View 1 (cartoon, each protein chain N blue to C red):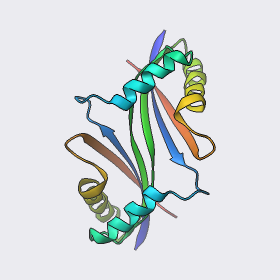
View 2 (cartoon, each protein chain N blue to C red):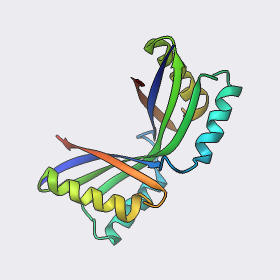
View 3 (cartoon, chains in turn green, orange):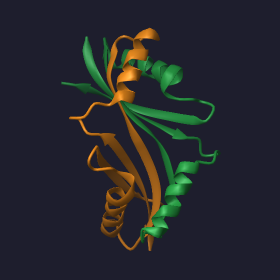
View 4 (cartoon, rainbow over the protein chains, first blue to last red):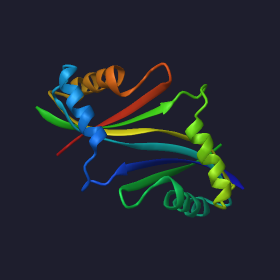
Length: 85
Length: 85
């Protein structure tokens, strides 16, 4: 069994409003950073997983995203896997 | 002026408890994914920035992280910049 670390990004879908991001975009102007725009805020999740192979880990992480980490109605996800030495 | 897109990860510091991550780690077991552990949950932020050069954009994004996006007492951040074509 090998150990993998997964880096998962869960972001609000492009088609949907992101009120938190909108608020932060507005605050940037007040902070003297008007050149920053289109802020979008999602979740970054790291986790460790034990699996026989990278493919097996891939399937498990995908299952975790679909079942728990990501609300697919409002969010999309992507992840990458790296072996932990 | 060029436009850059920044991908920022803000994560709870390793030395600190991450109660949200702990709760999710526990839920993984109930979902039939006991091989997943050590879940940590932070924020993933994307933003667009207009700047004269990549170095200038770098300075601005760093400033945005320190002033608004990241609470450096409890969180650490890292980011990457890519030019938008």
